Length: 124
Ligand SMILES: [Zn+2]
Image (cartoon, rainbow, N blue to C red; front, side, top):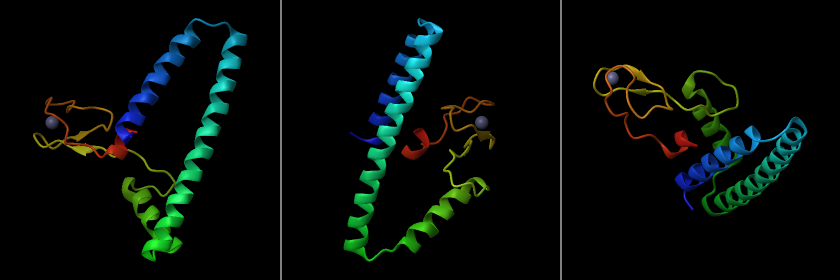
């Protein structure tokens, strides 16, 4: 499963949840929201476990250190100009008119030119 598959599954889950919420009562919505939060926590914990295991393997096999990782994270964090501990999808420059294209759009909002190929990380 690649990042695009994960993104697509996330969108499908989100749409299914939206349909479920629209057909539910207040109490059912509360329960669905609580269940969704618990599911997200389990998924985050699993992702942390996978990331930590991968990072340990990388350190053991390459000699990279936590300082290397921290430096790279800070650089990626600052791409949007704000050091906030988050990775924010970046706008793209339109190859036709030069306008900034919102990262959620696949075409320029001014001239309709196709947006440049995005990083898979921008699509999550
Ligand atoms: Zn444009």
